[in-house]
Length: 304
Ligand SMILES: [Zn+2]
Ligand SMILES: [Zn+2]
Image (cartoon, rainbow, N blue to C red; front, side):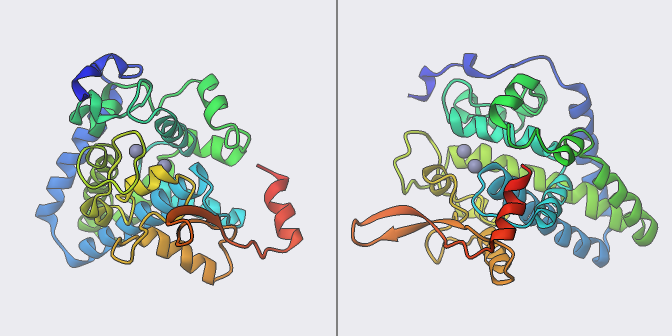
């Protein structure tokens, strides 16, 4: 079945993206170099930033909040989460969201930017090195991210997404030294990139399917552990707007717990989640009661 789909579906395959390739090679070398500069402050900095970039930023911010709108937060909180996402260096938020929305619209079919049906290497990193995804033209952005291109902050951050990370790197070097900078920036970013890429490669190849979604998405416990819950990918494809991806108690989903903490603090509202409906014996998407005040509602809808 998989062989029937040839590489012709690789969208926008082109020559090597030299800038990206040189950066990724440099990041891997610097990440390995970090191992020779071991220090406990470096390890702790890397772990904290792995969570800030991977969970607060990519999982809770880029993915569940601004791509799928699985919940709502006040704009300052939204911007904070999205800036955390920029620290993962996975491109600007508008490009990232556009790529991911295209992935959901064409999952494992022609047009999917990173399906393993075009090869595991392609799905993992080949699409970044040679594809046109993450470099979408204006017409594609208008089609897939009309909500975000109206926002001037996101347009700015999309262009200068690397600036927060450069500022952080300078601060870490100034106040923590080489070990803290190498661990907190290069080793952490490199490992976190692979973790995210595994969601595109591994969870469309290996794991269990709870839902018959008509494509190859799977639930992978080990990818979920590396990505704070993003590995429950078959659950996610079945109900993309659900803010909760791990549906059973043993499906560890740190990003969902983070959203619950925001809810307990009164910051996250209108949360969509997948629940098991025992009456129909089926999983259904339900939307949490929105207790927000009218003024909050107006503030949210006033500007996209
Ligand atoms: Zn997927
Ligand atoms: Zn998604």
